[in-house]
Image (cartoon, rainbow, N blue to C red; front, side, top):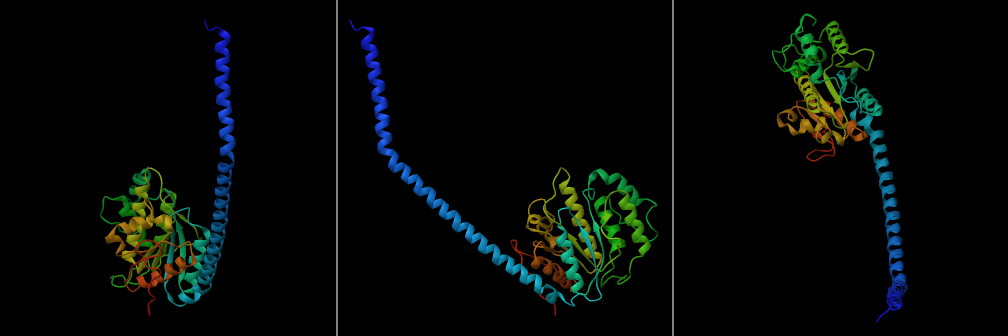
Length: 317
């Protein structure tokens, strides 16, 4: 009979064989495998260094181009909007201060007068404000002579009233060149400010020939679509009443939920409105000013670096 010691010795022999196999296998494979891994890591590190160098070189080149565009911008737009006026509308809190300042500076270089800057918070176009807003826009609180459009769409109603008091009627209108009553403009803005629909970024805001609506990024939240629609309605109303309107944003604003993308996706709207998708660059800010010049001749376009755009508006002689 096979006793317990025999089984124990057999088990020990098996385990020793397995351990010996592992040691021998590791010894044979450890060198080649480790060397191969080390070579791969070294190659990846070298690739990383090369990509970092290329990125740095591209950034330097981009900065040089941006610096050049910023330097020549005033000369490119000089005198193109003499005796014309422009209202700035900031449609997103994500619009950088340097964008607002850059566009304002180039408009001054073009000879235009910036009549003020309005800021539209998230309350603009928010359905939660619809009841109070409609009550104001259709009630006795509006200044005499301000006649709202006959529509059940509160967004259209708001856009129509704002265009009525903020835009100087353009060529072809029976009221062409007739500046809205400053008292009516101040009254309507004060009423809408009370409703938290808008605010004034400048001490005074007056009617203008053109409007530039600055935007950035995409709208978020349950009511994002309604708020974007309200902004499109405002820009469209201002464009129709005055000499032209431009919506200027960044590339993110071209994506779903972005104002620039919403306009470009609607062919009838985009046929009448100019859009910019790189206003966060010197070239985009130059395009915003030149697009206003083109709008004054009845030409709208889509400018920037996105799909289906042209880099800058064609200069108007």
